[in-house]
Length: 382
Image (cartoon, rainbow, N blue to C red; front, side, top):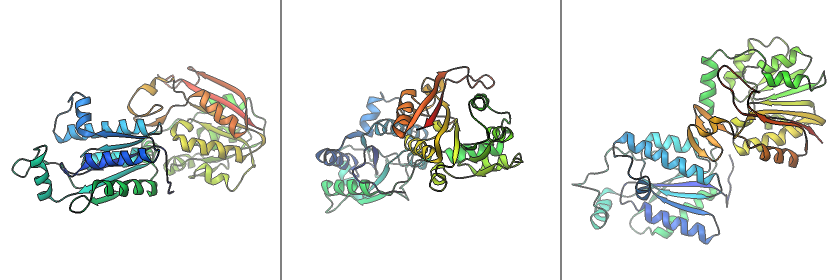
């Protein structure tokens, strides 16, 4: 976890009951960010309802669905460099969980105001409360990142300054997007394929043997086992312990299986591998994770070593399915970030790789009825 000031992108969610001052404080936060030269956008829950043509009603289920729709929009904008300030009640555990699990650089701010004060404000404005009621179904957040008592002597400008300072100093919680739970469940419940992938078979004909090979995102070890059987000394990494455990039963060839991130390994064994192999792992990473993985692969390889990559392309049909998180991120069953070939090649070249081979096509990773559009790249460390 890191503390980052003047960060680009992120979401500040200002929540609280009606008449807590969410919109007023939200506008002040946006104005303060703009005055400081930051790229800020303000969204208001009531206005968004109107923009979405009041398609959602007011049952708890519809409110939760609408809140998650708001947050997907916020994610989409923030991934393009904007700090999105959104004022919305959305005080449901389901909405909070989605926010904290899927929003990078997210700060939840709760404006706490006593009921008597809210009732007095409401009589002068919206008239939402009737006979002291009107906010049924919501629950006060127990673990908001920042709580501000927005009444009495507290002025909106002071509250906004507090929010911006908290956002810049917020200890980052990496968005998991449900990946840990998904892959743990997958490898515990599914009988994974054990035959080597077409990409592993393709790479075998391109690589000299024997060599030390490190695999990023090995899953159950199907390709690691194949390479080990063909003369490679294999180290296999996966961030899912369930995946590593699933492969242990077949690990009779001395494969080193480790539940660890490749970045951690790179700090210990730089320059010791002839091959770094990554199949269907880059698109399971966030953009920042991918960039760190590419840098780690370069460090791990000896001069002239080969980086083998296969990943889903932005032109794959799944890139248009599921919940939108950003221009290249979706959740369709589980999280994926679809790769733009030109961007990947640019990152590799800037990191110090020479492109040996590149292709983007269907027909390369057929599995049952699935025929995804994938990218294949072989690159050499200069």
